[in-house]
Length: 67
Image (tube, rainbow, N blue to C red):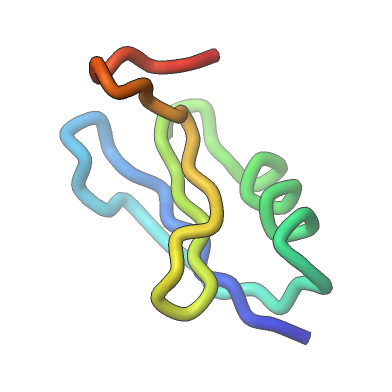
């Protein structure tokens, strides 16, 4: 089972907290990241090894947050 790192970011982009989780796949890691998110954290990332597999919110090329 793969290991994922879930990172929650403060409003200035600095790391607020993170944890590692064993998940069956990327989809389960994404669901876990959403489920564990506190309302204070507006941004988070899901990493598998050195690969960013998911980020919220997503941003367009112009820098606008996508819904």
